[in-house]
Length: 156
Ligand SMILES: [Zn+2]
Image (cartoon, rainbow, N blue to C red; front, side, top):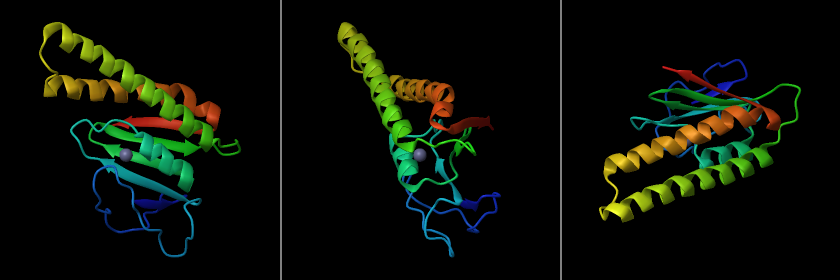
């Protein structure tokens, strides 16, 4: 889904792609993403916030805003007008934060599994995925503004 600055929809249908892939063509009349807003879906039952790949794409394309539309709500990161937008550091720090959270939570689960001698269940893995998403969501809430971006979540 692609929108102009005023949220006018520039494509009349949702672009169908594999989950987490954002291969969206540019609308006619545009040769980059800088005056555009983009949105893509996180179709899982709990979609969670942006992936590291999403933020990397955001850093490369530099649209006005990017949104992840999930079942639980819409996550948006948007340039704050009149502020310097530090995409590079936002992406770098987010990647570090994501990796740190991912490794810590999986290490904890692994030690639980070792103690009881039974591998992680699908339910435990889903819970971990959700907990990682929630932690990095909190990180984006607390940190986006210092890189020049608003981060919002609108629950559905
Ligand atoms: Zn995504």
